[in-house]
Length: 195
Image 1 (cartoon, rainbow, N blue to C red):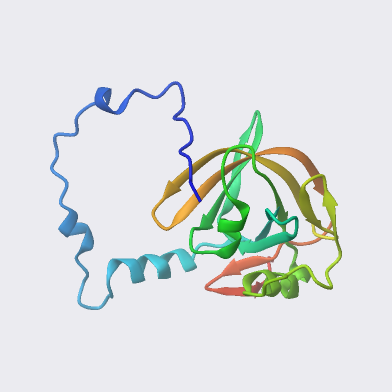
Image 2 (image 1 turned 90 degrees about the vertical axis):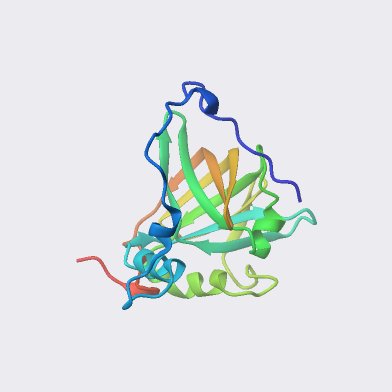
């Protein structure tokens, strides 16, 4: 699979025209851990587990025509004009590879509700066919889960590979709103409630 870089915003200066930062960067300073803490990656993972987030299923059509999907907590609004979202997918996930993230790829974002914890567990798992037995239908080329509080039909506008993830800018073509309180992910658990 070939990942393609998205274009930089037009109002951004080329890298060689950015002002020079005269302060030296001390990478070792950032990597050093206090005696009571583990390595930076472990501390960072723990720190991010303390960030409350919503939970979404990202779905797409595989090359063989079957649906695929995975659970994500890294999704946020990006722009209103045009309506866009950012979605981060782990490169190691089978769904990321099957989705073939490149500009123009269609995908769905389903924001899950508090009643969707079982659905979240299905899409967090490694089953080959996660859609068996679930209420869903095709929305053009996107597998749409039925009964979730929010569904966004998106087309990839840009792809930004970074580290172990790929960031997709999804341009929203359709937005369907339902009812329900959000499913909240906090401290590696999906059973938190607002209020």
